[in-house]
Length: 149
Image (cartoon, rainbow, N blue to C red; front, side, top):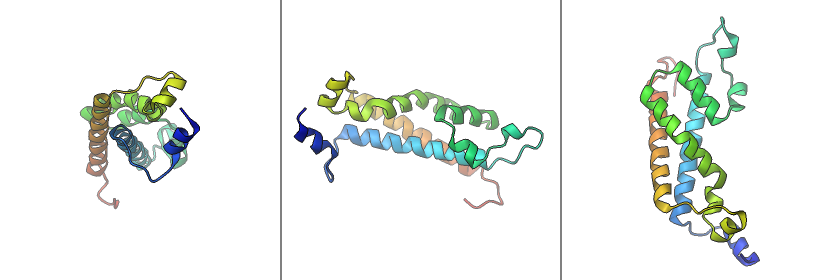
């Protein structure tokens, strides 16, 4: 990869290829899921008998997605949502850690990363979008009546 080709990757505006768009949409979905999980945990009532299970903004902001999902599953009874969140967990790590870089053949070759198949990216994006929708719906469904959204 030439210096000019590398510079083209970082110049905006430019047209995104479908793979890059799918990755960005999936990452967006994962961020909304993570933010929803944090907000869900923070709005739980304070547990005076077990202060360690009281979630503050400071506490949850330090938690990784895996930890947020585990804590959410302890306080929520929506089993199908739990399954959806578990299913996207590994894909989120895969996308977050290598997919954008892997879509550029020159960079992928230098780093020894396999380029992700576009159909796999489409599937990941669809699952991330559905899990995001389900999580936001659960957040809204369980919103206490006296709290505004």
